[in-house]
Length: 601
Image (cartoon, rainbow, N blue to C red):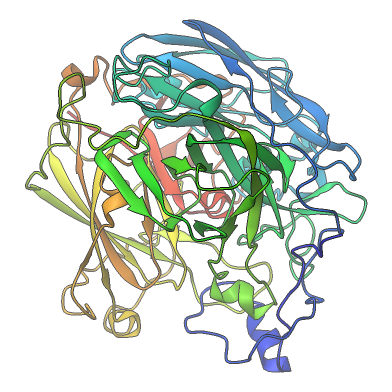
C-alpha cells in the first residue's frame, strides 16, 4: 500500500507557529529544512492505495436546448472509501456532463436547483456577504458558463441566485472562438463550498475545423483518444468524507484563506489509472481546484505538446516537458504514449511548492494525480500537426497585438494582520460592494497591469472578455509599499509600479500566448495583459444591459446577515447590471477578491 500524500514539513520554533496565524500576507521563504513528519496543524487524508480505480470518462450531452439540474448526491471517490455527501449535475453523483456544442449556434439552458442539505453546512461563514443560516440546509446556486461570451442576465452573476425548488433560463449565443470552456457554481459567499462539493463541468466548443470527429481537418485525435481531465485536489476526513477545511487553526464555520489538498482527484476519482493505447491522445485539461497552482509534467519527463489555451488553438503545437496551470485555467494537450512498452506506466505529476504561508504550517506539494499504463494495442497513429492555424482548412492565425489606448493599474493585496481567521483579500484595496468599480468603454483596447504585492500567485478571471498575456516583471514589493502607504480597506489603492521594477519583463511563455480568460499573476510581479472590449454590435447583445435577479433578497453586502437595501451607495434592491472579475482562488473570490464590472457604451 502506498503512503498517502499526507507527509508534511514540521514547524521549527514557536515563532513560526505564531506567524502562521496570519495564514497569508508574508514574503520570503521558510528557513528550516523540511523533515518527513506530518504537521499537527493540518488535517490529513486517510491512507488509501493509489491507481486502483479506473479514470472515469465523463458522459457527453449535446443539443440546442439542455436542462441542467444541480442536486444533492453521494459519491464514492475511491474503492476503499465510503460514499460521501456531494453535489452533482444531471444525475451524476459528482461533477457534471461534458457539453459539446458548435460555435455560432445558440444554446438555451434551463438550470434548476434541487439541492438539499449542504455537505459543508457547518463550514459556511455567515459573516461573509450575507451568507444566511438557512443556506446550510437550502443553499443557493448560480450557474456560470466560464469563458462564455454571454449576456449579463445569463452570465451566472453571483447575486442572481437560484434557490432550491427554482429554475432559471439562460441563453448563450456562443458567437466566439472554439475552445475549452467550463461551467461551475458561482453564488455570493459560498462559491468554494458549492464547487468543492461537485458543481463543475466542462464544455467543448467546436467549429468546422476542430469538429471532434475522426475526419477533422487538423488531424487531431478524437473519440476515445480525446479525453477531458478535470484535475482537483482534496482532503478527506478519517471517515472518508470530504473535508473543505485545511487546518484546525481556523475555527469551523469561519472563512479560510485557502489551502491545498493532499490527494489528487481526476474526473471525480482519487489517484485513478487509465489504460492507454500506444499512440497520440488529446487531453482537454482543467485545473478545477479551489486553491493551488501546479507545475505539471510526466514522471519520466517525456516531451508532450500544448496546442491551445482556453479560447482556441495556438498557431502551432509547442513542445514542452512541463507547464504551470493555475486554478480555473484550461489547456489543450497532445501526449504520445507510443514510446511506452506494453505494461509500462507513467504518472502525471506536480512539483510546485505550496505558497509560503502554507509551508509555514507544514504544507508540502501534492505530487501525483493519475497513472497511464500502455496496452498492447496501437492507438491513434497520426503525427503531431506542424500547424494548427493559417493553412488551408484552418482558422486564421492569431492576430498581432494591438496598441492600448487605456492603461489600468490593478493591485492585489492582503492586509498584514496577525489574526485568526485570516484577513480579507482585495483587488485595488476594495470590497465587492464598494461603488468604485472599473467601467471600460466598449470598443477600446486596454492594458491591465496587475501589481501583486502578495508572495502568492493569483489567477485573475475577467468575465465576458478574452485577452492576451504580454509579460511579467519582478517588483520591488517592499519599496513599492513603503513609498505608497496602503489606506484602510474601501479606499482605492492602485499606484503605478513605475520606478519599482526589479528587472526586465519576462515575456509570456510560448504555450500561454493564445486567447485567455484567466491570467496567473505571480507573487511580487507586475503582470500585463492586453484586452479589447467588444461593442454591443459585435456581441449581438448589450453588455451593459440591466437584468432583474431571480431572488433580489438572497444576496447581500459584505458583513450582512441578509441583503442590504443600500450599501456603500449601491442600491441592491434594484436590477443588476454588468459582470464581475475576480481571483479564481475560490476562497479569495468569496471574501473579498471579487469586484463588479461594467462595459459602458
